[in-house]
Length: 382
Length: 108
Image (cartoon, rainbow over all chains, first blue to last red):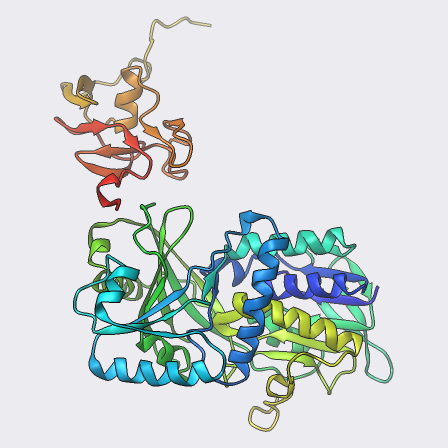
C-alpha cells in the first residue's frame, strides 16, 4: 500500500481517483459512508464566479477544466451541467461593485459578461423586475455531489483502490523519526508511507491525531428544497452580496439568496453562513429568511412549497483557503481539506495536486498559499 | 379461533364514525369518513393510482402510507404535490390526478 486517504467525501474521492490512476496503491477509509458529511449536504456548485483573483480562483479554473473532462469519463448520472451562473444586482451601487469584480476576474481568465436588465430577463424570465443588471459567468457548473463522489470512488476502486467505509481512524502510526507509516482504525491497521487528510470539516481532528495544528472550523449552512417544478430557474442565480458573505470572517449569520434548478425538478435555495459549532438544530429564522430572499429574487417561488430543509458544515479555515499539500511538520502526512463551501468545485484540482505532490512531480499550481502549517504563527496549538 | 364477520378496518375496531360525506376524484363522486385521509378515501373507492411520474408518465398511488416517500402526491383543490396519505379528507374536496410535477401552468 502506498497511500491511505482518510475521508470519502468529494475531496477524498477525487484524491483516490487521481492517485489510483497515477499507478499508486491506495486505500480510502471513512468512519461513515461515501459522501456522508459535507459533500452530501451541499448543492454541488462548481463556481468560478464567486472567487476573486488569487490562488483559490486559479484552483477553481483548473478544476473547471478537470470537471469537464470528468463529465465525459464518469456516467451521466452525476448530473453535470455546464449551466452558467448569473449574478444579479438590485442597486446601482452593487452593480458597480459587481462590474469591477468581473473586470478583475476577466483579467485572471474568467469568462464574465455584463448583462443589461433586458438581457437578464432573456437569461432568466422569472427574475424580479426591480433588478438593475448583472453578470453572466458561462463557466459556472453544477453536479450532483453525492453521486459524483460515489462515481469517483467507484472508478478508483476499479483501478485497484481499497474502499473501506464505516471504518474510523483512531491513530496515525509513526516511526521513530516521526514519519507516517499508516493508520490504526477501529478494525485494524493500514500500513502506508503516505496518509492524506481529506476529512473535511473534521480535518482538524485528524491533524491533531498526528500532533499538528490545523484550525478547521464548521461554518453551518442551510439549503431549502422545493417541490419539483418545471425548469423555472435555468442558471445558478445569486445576489451580488453573496461574494462578500463568502469572504466574511465573521461568525455571525449571513444570508444571501442563491437559487438554482436541478435536473430532477426541485429548486435548491441557499445560502446561509454562521459559525455555531456542530449545532444540528433547525433554525426557523434562517430558513424563513432564505425563503423570503429567494422569493424576492424569483417572485414565482412565493407560491411554491418547500418540501424540506437540510444543513451541512463547511470546513472553514481562517483565510478561506484550503490546506493542500505535504505537511512539513510530519513527513508522509498530506492535507486536502478546509475547502469551505467550494470543496465540490475544487476537488479535482486538489486530487490532481495531491497525486502529483505524492509522486514528487512538480504540481500544476504553486502550493505555497495552501501550506498546511501556515497558521502556526497565528493559531498556536492549544 | 372465533370467526368474526368484520370486513373493514372500521368494523374490526368497532368504530362509530360521524356521518360520511362526499368528495370527488377526477369529477367522480366518492365517499369519505371523518378522520380518513385522502388516500384512505381513494382506496375505499377502489382507486389505487392518482399521479403519473414526471419522466415516464407511470402511475403512482400510496406506497409507504406514512408521509415519508412522497409517492402518493395528488392535486387537492387545485394545489399540487399534496401527500394524500397524510392529508385528512374534507367534505367537498376536489381531487384530481396529478400529471408530472403538477405545475403545467408554470411551463414556458
